[in-house]
Image 1 (tube, chains in turn purple, red):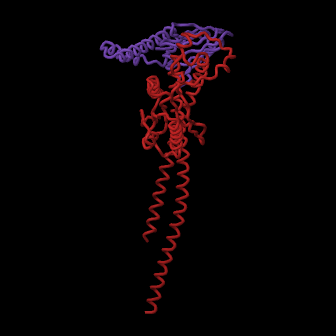
Image 2: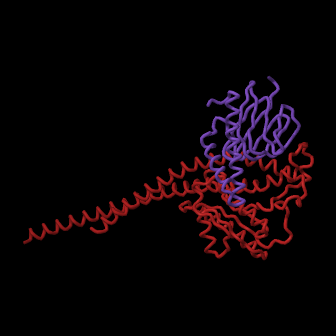
Image 3: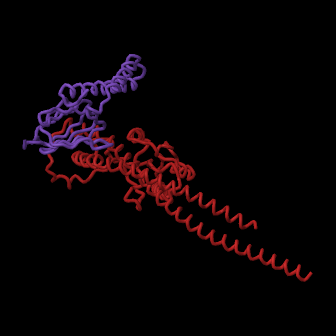
Length: 142
Length: 291
């Protein structure tokens, strides 16, 4: 397949990924967007959610939280605050984080705490969802 | 015979010091390797971030975001001083503190109020003695910090800036150039400096922005400040270990030299003692013969 686009994912701690892929779907702040090779230049802030890319007909999933993506016709650069490959996600940890967040939300103390708990909850849910999608796509074993 | 034993004790002491400095050298070199790796991993991120941000910032007027806007009247200046927590690394911390001190004095002469934010213990101690106001200090963090620290300190600085407690902020850190070269640097981080829009106008990058340019800036600018601070911290930490390595290497060499000198003195004293003992014996024997 000649028609590929380069995907790079960089976080403050590491270069997570650098690969030639067929398609990238990323969680923008205004909803998910898809990128094929020769996409027009595009810059978008990212929300919390799963990014996936297609390679050799398979879908791979990566969890993202915050940051932005820069798209040029030949390259997608994702600068994420947090990024984890599906196989790195600890479901156990995400579940615990979610329980904790749920508890905090039900207590509803301060506004700041509430917003934080909501964000934590969103992160943990998206982590779990990301992992599930990867498992069902067959690119991550249980 | 007292000096003989004393010299011997001194040699022992110097040898022990040497063991310590040697161990510290090795610890520093191991830590340096870690710190260097962290910088190298962070650099691509920081560079890309700077690229995108300066491109974005050159597209808007400075009034588009409060963190870009230069204030007309600058009353108080914040200096973020990043130093190490521990000493024994040569003139590293002193150089950093002097750079910050000079900057502070310059701003003071211009009639501005200078406030410090100290990350690392050494800088805090230095500034406290010089009588400048310290807004916040974060001691004992340089050993185990991650982006969270940059996040926390960055948020603090930004909120002070937006509350008009600070009208300008500078960061002083030790740039890690190489194993033998560390340069203290002072840079302005707030307001974020815009590159000349003219120079960039020819750039062909006609992006679609989502959300708007302003929206993206609002999202990216605060983080940019934190990225800069994190970079300063990583650089300082690597520089600290490199400086300590050099300092400890020198100390070890000095110990070797000192041991050599002391051994010479010891041998001379020993010989003198033997000679005088011999003289005593010979003298005694002579006296007996005559008697």
